[in-house]
Length: 43
Length: 470
Image 1 (cartoon, each protein chain N blue to C red):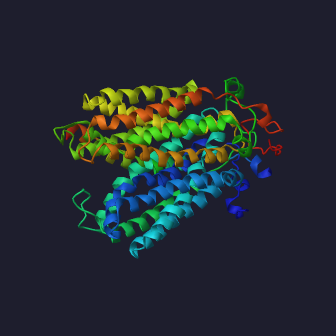
Image 2: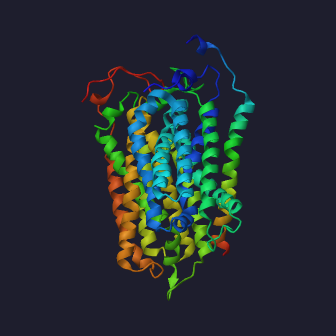
Image 3: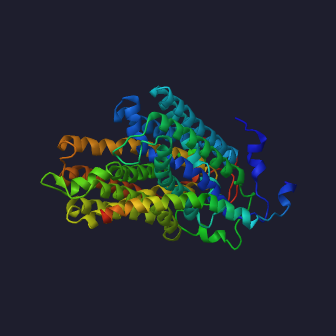
């Protein structure tokens, strides 16, 4: 429990890295799916 | 069952000052991977050709995986709650990855049973444990916005299919140059086996990253500026704890089970049939005015609304409440289904709009369920209770396609159906949504006799003494 009493600071870089790691594939998937979905309106 | 110390819950208790915004990407790292389960159609034809089998025989792989998802979430939910998210994510990663590798061995050696065992059974266990692994942790980190938190994670499950579908197509194209990603060509079995190995290894790394960064809040932690009394004041939100064993003895659990079952069954009815459905709705003199490429675009659009609905509607539930949002999913959904059945074939844009909204409610129903459980039963064993609730998904996964396929089989041959042939199935869905609407209306706060004897604030991680079985 004593370990828990120490205050920590989560590096902003780690948070940014984590969000980028999950955000990039998601952006790729969104882009690909929107490209496919656009065919509903174009052909 | 004890876990190695590096996976133990005690090792991942966050210190004061930890930033809770590191938890959603940890959850997404798992859900984006297991969401691949909804992208199996991309290699279905290749597997049929490779095994010289039928669509039904290959489709069983997906069915086994979804049934195993429901069973493993129900069976291992208590274990997940007890051992924490890191152990659960680690185990899920191993099962999901090994499932792919065993499945790849099955494809490479032409043994379909190995594919059933690998992707279906082993992978399905990974799916179930992975699906519930971050849920209770997110709820504890975001007591002020549980709908937003679980919506983000469960949105990832929808997003996983968006990533896996085009990625699988590209990878199979690399492994088999003769395959160009269109319906005109079919990837070789060798390419699908290599795809499985690649996905298994990539998903393992991704999910272990999530397991590495996830933390649980310390006992009594609450976000800065958060006033628990604002949550306590809301109707249907309990500050008590209900164990998973007691939760399944309450009418509230089974009413919510019915709600989820009805909502998912209705949504799956459209999702399963999306591509032929839009073509059939606009068939004139035997020829559809909707091209195959446009139908594929419709499927993509539904995927987007499925994913978006998970985040948007679940977040909205934080403001308007869980019961009202399910009244929207089921009540408005019911009206939309009636419109789809009656005037849906009058214009393509109207059909697309109605179907997209229905699917957004389908996704929303999934994502809001954990927050609804938190409201009713507290955070004590919400992961385990959520796991048990997911059996409704497994049941709906069987019932939804069965209803639609039975109705359509009785109406004619695929390729010759028209909008009117779908009406009986759509009106069955309307009836189901009406049942779900009533079930939701009947949900009241859980009776005090089901509460754990030791008071447990909903924002702590304490384990109450076990109550007497009731």
